[in-house]
Length: 566
Figure 1 (cartoon, one colour):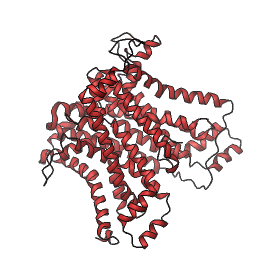
Figure 2 (figure 1 turned 90 degrees about the horizontal axis):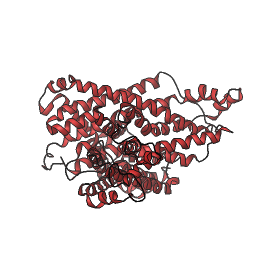
Figure 3 (figure 1 turned 180 degrees about the horizontal axis):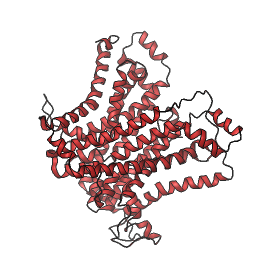
Figure 4 (figure 1 turned 120 degrees about the horizontal axis):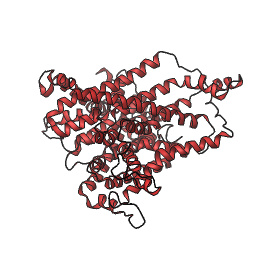
């Protein structure tokens, strides 16, 4: 083939193999989903499509998804933009620690966030009991509402907006800001007339990603919406699958495509808004100098840390206190405090102990295989570009860009029957979850690897190629050692994200293949909040320890690889 004319033997086999792997992980599941849309159960028909789209529950859930998508996005924009302006434009002290803590909710599983806030404000809240503000037992939790869902989505994805807007602020040219200040404009005027207009592409991009994330979120609407019968599309799919099993796959496939269309509409709106004006900046200057806050700096710092206390520390304190009580409703005192809940989920409950093992194995395996595939693919995308490499890049990013429920339904359809030729079934096994994790989170290893290759001089690799070294040898002895810190950091991000994942696992798990997110959700649904809180605290501890461990080699990584590093 012409695209491989400069490759021979094992080199061509490696490139073809990586290309096929990406196609199997991304294009094949999505293709199977689209086939089910027009040919349910293998027969051309529009009956399932018509029946699903004519159902009132479909459009109620769609309206609810749009409500929380738009509301959560707006709140995330407020939180994220304010935090980004404070960190990126001012002389605020302690910004590195602030960024570490502010980004942490983004790395904590959404269901953990939901459970933490439920334990903080519910009638059994140990924190509210300690300060004498707990409502009577049996009172309705105020978070069981659309406003509670929107608020937690804003808290969860505010850091996502923050990261994107902060990256845009780093490219803000110094001379434009200084020209405005020199002309006598106040800092507020410069912010309103120069900085924010130039940040429009970043803000629009952040809004699109936040919208897609809110619409596809399962954990928060499941914990807060299902008890109040406020269903969105992901929770509607979950309930129909739980009640109907494989028989309703064709129907839920229609719902998953509907979610995908809503997500793509958000991305298309971003593209349209970005193209209406030219936002390009011609500048070679250093980033803009920080605004000196003067006497306002202390107040700004207090406000920033108050935000951290509210969105991170208080919910985690409430979650920890709930994990220490022996039973629901028992006040927490030195006499009643116990670690029995932690011992139970780690040692006694077979499903929870198995879930810890499964989640650890799945996360490690997904990270390992993603790192192996990311290096040769990143090499093709960064150093050996062809006309077809953008298609590979799109295919690799698509499962992550679309809501996780879309990929989960696609995997169910793809592996419902045994694999052809070999006759092995992945359905209801750990392998189908591993496949979904690898497909969904692979891009987290690919992006930092590509960024790392863009910052590395190609001279050593070119010299080895001229000397006759094959691609496989160059990847193993030159390219991987050079880019290893960035690639391995991506692997750590995959482990952290997959370890307590729920959206995909909730639709793919079976008895024996439980994951932490699934067991946590099951405990909460059964009313065993103390056990769910104990698992959540352990998951948060693992996440935070990995964040701190990764910081040890942060200086060897390209900028932006670790989202919690300023």
